[in-house]
Length: 268
Image (cartoon, rainbow, N blue to C red; front, top):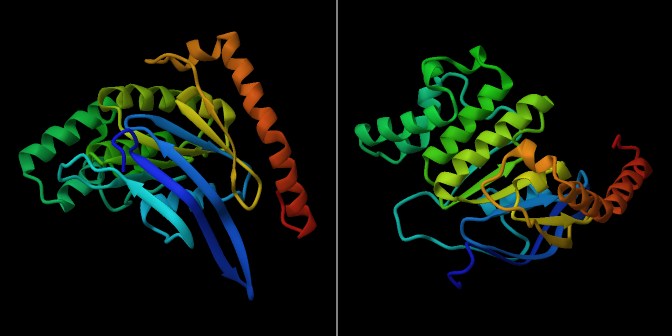
């Protein structure tokens, strides 16, 4: 694989068998994602976004096509994933959750202390290092997930709507923190979202997916310079124009998804 791409996906397809029939979730998706870039995927509910991410993560096998992930030549995991909702271990402290991947890899205790301490500091969790998840707010739990993912130093960071359950204020704060942490090491990020605003705020490029089955409808470059301030970016007229342009690409697909859901009696 050429060094100019961290993730190369070719003709990716995913089928599921359900109730005696074959359902295609993802169909003929081909994308290249550059090292150190923030690649966003938006699409209507049920379009196969999460199926695509799970295949990149190695959690599901493709029915067809290929996925290649370039390696930096270091002994580090291929990917770390931040899920939608709460995904940290409830029986572990904040510190132990953040250290989990490093501990599994058997790294020296001094190195674990240094790395975990750094990312807890960057996410504002140092004074909560001994707390358990039930003592944290939803936003703080997602900070732990982010600290754990970055601390593990993966080749690729995969994020599946990590902020979707948060209120708007916490979502904005966490977007700011994510951008600030990402600027340090420029991890390659593949990020799934329903929010066009979030896609434009965080992304370098945005893939718009069609309604089921999920195909590539458009790939749009985000022209805004980095580093970015979430609030300053959203005050720019060009920001609103790009959000509108992407929503125009997405509008028809969302309506198609709603129509399909209504035809089979599924709430959209």
